[in-house]
Amino acid sequence: MWIIIAIIVVLVIFVISLYNNLVSLRQKVKNSWSQIDVQLQRRFDLIPNLVETVKGYMQHESDILTKVTELRTSWAQAGSVKEKSNLDNELSGALKTIMAVSENYPDLKANQNFSQMQEELQNTENKISFSRQFYNDSVTRYNTKLEVFPSNIIASMFHFTAEELFQVDNVEARKNVKVDFGK
Image (cartoon, rainbow, N blue to C red):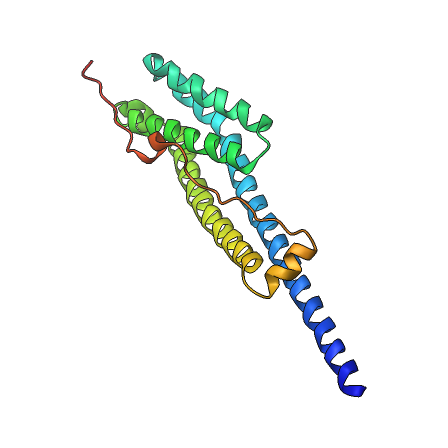
């Protein structure tokens, strides 16, 4: 009798432990997404200042500035990780273009505001990159835990669902930015 009670107690403790571990991993995924969101918001807060500083120098690149502004507006309406990931990838490409184009404007490069914003944007990009990596690591750990035995049994009993990785779906975002002034 005592052996059966001991086995039941051990099983209950085991189930509770697995459940708590799954909850902890899920919260880590949510937290790591929030960190990406914070850094992306920081980038979006820098964009209006960057655009205003660059506007006067880059008259014939106004389509790039318009695109950056539109992407910033779209960000507020995006709801899913996939939508935000796609917008982030497009924005990264547009910002790379602005930085590449700025190389051809010595006055702009010498502008102290632009230099400070460029440095701040580069720091933010590094933080975003780290946050994406941390998020994907957290999601991978969580999703793996959902699939391995015996935690997969507990996960299905309590309706834990897999999370999406933050990834680049846009082939264009993976390419280097090419700026051609020969046209």
